[in-house]
Amino acid sequence: MKKVLILPGDNIGPEIVTEAVKVLHRVDNKFNLGIELDYAHLGGAGLDAQGSPCPQETLDKARQSDAILLGAVGGPQWDHVERHLRPEQGLLTIRSELDLFGNLRPAIMYPQLAHASSLKPEFVSGLDILIVRELVGGIYFGEPRGIRTLEDGQREGYNTYKYSESEIRRIGKVAFEAAMVRNKRLCSVDKSNVLEATVLWREIISDMASDYPEVELSHMYVDNAAMQLVKQPKQFDVLVTGNMFGDILSDTAAMLTGSIGMLPSASLEKNGRGMYEPCHGSAPDIAGQGVANPLATILSLAMMLRYSLSAPDAANAIEQAVSAVLDQGLRTADILTQGTKQVGTVEMGDAVVAAL
Ligand code: NAD
Image (cartoon, rainbow, N blue to C red):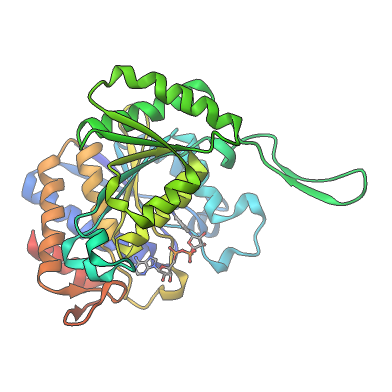
């Protein structure tokens, strides 16, 4: 019996998660996985139902599950609430409470979608890169932080960027091991020409390379990495970087593939338990219209089956089914191109189930 906790979240979250759950039921039956589902609130849904963007009940259920599937959280409905009650805070809380430090964000260019990218097809066709982002440290969590009033009366905002040696080593291990099962090239991204925290980052990652002699390690400053990602993205295999740089670079990589609606992600703790979610947000602008692309969530489910539920056959089957549906020419609005057929969220989910 494998316990999966479903966190639909806000806005398009419940719409896309419903489709992924249909797919999960299908592979559960087909591969006899013995999945047991439970549901809880996160984000604005948690705040509205239980007074917290990350209710205690959600954390308790999360700790008892083998894996978590999340839709997305946030939206203008909660713009007015205090910062510590904001939906996004719920996401940060669950990530840090479960110590989900290793964020894997693949950017894969399906050949069927090469024309949906803003880059010329020859630059992105066949693209397959993996960004490994540290998720629970760095400047997003560093203390002290805040906005203070200076002696001259003006206010100053401040944050702290720090990484300990052990934090760097554990994300480095995830990245080197990912590179080992891919094309054995790892690029570590830092800003060691300016930030001391990343001088240490570079030193530790370089030190770890001797444990992985087959992996070709390189280093790149983040500004250059941003440039190279749009100039010649296929030069990369695995990139590893800290929380803030990873946040920005993974969104850039996302757009190379044509749609953020296609990109899954995994956030892992040290024993392989994980939370799986699409890279995109809760898309309040299209919520309730039935047009959101559920494929990033469905592909997140495939990552869950591979990384946390030891069901690689089911994971492969889902990825093949997604590819088959694209081959059939079915597209949600975000990936629609000339000559393809527009479908809504539910039709897309049904098509994946049918292909399975
Ligand atoms: P967003 O990713 O929600 O939307 C950006 C654009 O992409 C929008 O035009 C949206 O319609 C489109 N889009 C996103 N997902 C799509 C999908 N599946 N299918 C089709 N189109 C899709 O980013 P945003 O607008 O900056 O943020 C909206 C809310 O989501 C904010 O409250 C933000 O804080 C939150 N957010 C949450 C997460 C998360 O839950 N992990 C991540 C990012 C943003």
